Length: 515
Image 1: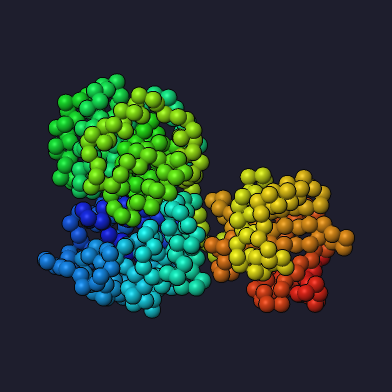
Image 2: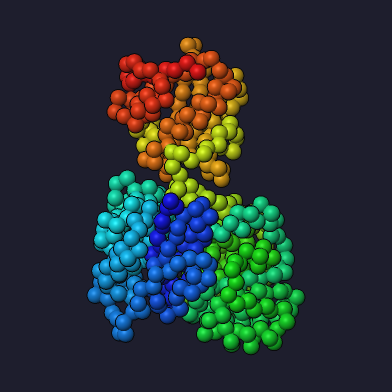
């Protein structure tokens, strides 16, 4: 029977469309993996309920906010729910109960939902995942995803999550449509003259920044530059923009489209918001001038600007046509430095959806691919080695410097007769751990690491078994041994489950097995 996964998310003229858009990307990947996906959404003005259904998903609709609704909650985005948190939670409970399904996951992408709401749903749900950007409230969840690049990202949710909650932090987990990963290595970097510009501020654009940006470009009198303008067909500004673009044959207006990827691929420069579209632009190496539309976008814009990935020209309330025109004029005059585009390209690889999907659906029975480590794995292995849980279970607790790790790693790669390092991956190529065999006087010593985001999933045994099978194919008839600390019960059970025999030794428990 397929897994059932529910999404609780909303779109509106106030909320925007980004939350639903990224949930749809994840939902399609889950559906392709065999899961049953159901959305629960409130009927706000500007919602995307019909659009979600057109994409092939069932939508349980919560009623529109009652007229004059004002939340009694002081939290920043309480009004976005369109009901009190208690009413919304009860309505969601009723929706799930009516379907007589216990979801494997409930995925929440909503700034108006916090720990109180989540605790109300816990009895009905196996696991809860929260997608967040702003780190301004407590959660009671098993998994949290924040795809942003902001200062002090690793500590951003300290004190806001329950112990043991898995954190997926940073642009490696950006939820982009598959086409972005496909195009990532096909699109060359931009450099030199600007020949085409993309203007897109999201589906809602209730402040008509699209119009301001377009008027700023028109003021440059550059009929030699093509411009693509994207805004939702139901935007109140669509008609006026259509009239404006008709007077300029080099300006092309696009309504609601399934993806921005083809237009981004053509563009040399983008003008837009500092929201979820940032990761799409970065993935395709597209330099951008951005405006922040809300407070939560400010740290994103600051973080990306510090890395030289975009030009942030201010908040929507301070942006004028003249300010945009000055910035555009300077870029058009001097052209694009190709190092800017290359930095963007390196920041996001577009495979975030594969990584998140693997965390959600991986089981001990999932097929694994085993390969030898390469130079490209250096950074990943260092991150895994310095993970706090890894260091706690290691016989050497000191953090490892990048220089020390590089010297060690390179020496092991060159010792092809005395060391084998395997990377274990899912069928889609997502790394989930490493197993290393090093030759000693009496045999081969085994070390392994499960990637932090996959711990607690019961995959340690299957990971180690797959690597042992690979190693036995290459070096059969050898003695393999490993060690576990006395308090590391999980590793002890894995060794025992794989037929290793044990004896005390070396400050822990020593295991061995003849292959």
